[in-house]
Each structure stands twice: as C-alpha cells, then as structure tokens.
Image: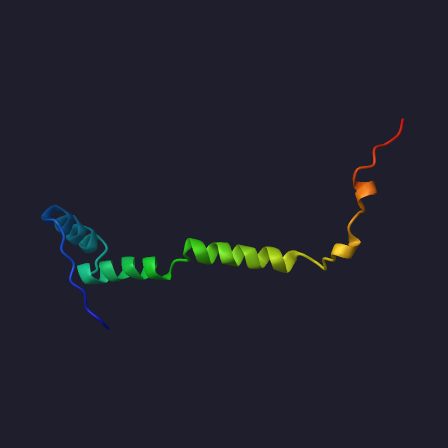
Length: 79
C-alpha cells in the first residue's frame, strides 16, 4: 500500500487529530476513510453514462418507419 505525505496548517492538523480521537481511530485511518470515500464515489461522468444507459435500455423498439407523415403531423381539426 503506498504512503503519502500531506502538509496541513497546524490548526487543521489539530482539529483532525481531535476528530480522529472522537471517532476512536488514528488520524491515518480517518484520512484513509475519507480518501476511500472520495475514490469510490461515482463521478459525474459515470453517473451521466449510467443514466444514459438506463434511458436507452428503457426505450422499446424504435423505427423511423412508424412515424407520422408530414400531412398528419400538421393536420388541423376542421370545425
């Protein structure tokens, strides 16, 4: 597993240590959890691709030959 080094301002480091202690985990475990959440979350691109695939899968048979003709599309009801 690779190691990383992160530089933080003293006040952020102190608050992160406190937050880790409140959760009864090490600071390293807290950062690991946060980065795993970020790394495993669906990206906007992935979400849009998934939605596109869902929409395309829901469209039943489509044929351009089944469309209405120009006359029917523009027909007006006569009164």
